[in-house]
Length: 173
Image (cartoon, rainbow, N blue to C red):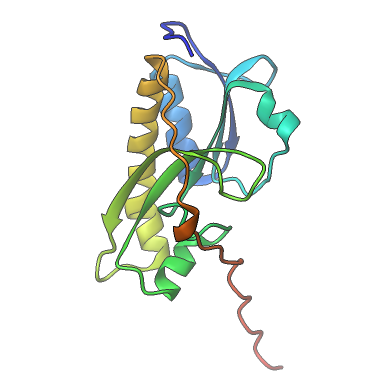
C-alpha cells in the first residue's frame, strides 16, 4: 500500500453511535463517503452482516469491522452481554480486517479497558466502548493515510464464540 495524501473513497455501513462517530471521523479527516464503486475501504460499524469474498475484494485496502470485545474473545453478535455473563474484568474494542469467517480476520487495532464496577452492558457499550472505538478508528485511519496497514493474526488458542443472548422468557398469560 502506498502512502496517500488524497481523499480515500470509503463505503460505510452501520447504525448507532459507533456508526455516527465513524462517519464524523471520516468526514473530519476529509474522506469521501460513497455508495458507488470504486472505493478503497469498506467500514462496518455495528453491522452483523457476513461478507463473502467477492464483496471483500471490492475494497482496495480491505474491509474493516468494529467489534466490542478484545478479539478473539467473544466472537459473535452479542459480545458485551457475554463479557458480563462470563465475569470478565477487562474488555475492549477491536477493529479487524474482515475475512469470510465470523470475527476471525486479522486485527488492525485494539484497545483494552477495565470494566467499571458499577457498569452494565448498555452503560459499558455507550459510555466506554463507543468512545474507545472512535478513538481507535481515528488512529487507524491516520495509519492508513500514511500508507500503513496494520494487521496481526488472531490467536486461535484464545478464541471463544458465543451465540446471541437467549431471548427473555415471555410472561405467562
